[in-house]
Length: 184
Image 1 (spheres, rainbow, N blue to C red):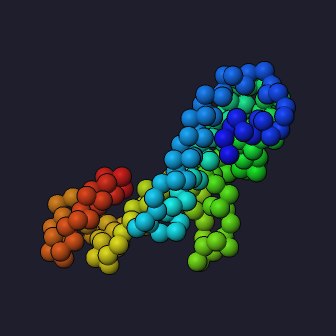
Image 2: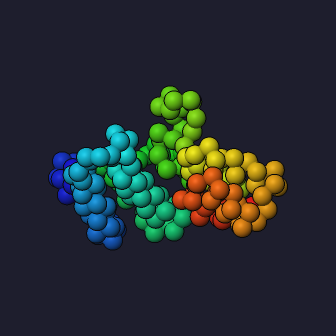
Image 3: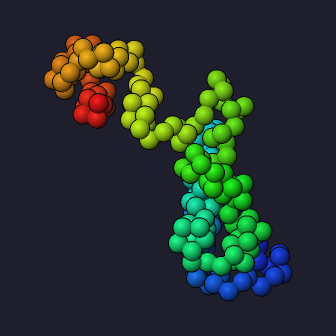
């Protein structure tokens, strides 16, 4: 539903300052329409929802930042955006809590939606993100073995890792090992 139709449905005049944020919200609405009509052949069921969740997050974060961080919009305009569902009130409520500042969507904290009762990558602390994201990208047993060898300090340089991967015919993954060794 477009922003203009939401306003007509409410039959309420938007508060002062609406004209400042309306063009950006219209852009988000156009992106959302495009993401919804994007063909989904060849994608997994969850992959088709990723762009929609991303745009939903960006729109909510935009309104959140305008009110809480930059203090540009009024309380009335902020409440109007929440009432018209232009921003996700529950997601913003989580962003205000400590530890949930980088939450991308509410599905990330619902463990019932995952196979093993785990959380999303956005819940991992930034200090541990390099190692975790590196290991989650790994798709072959040889690549995981290299990562374990790096962690045990058996492989300490790029050349050693590259030779090991070439000998085990895993040449496609050697770029990722460079990033891991450099950051480790």
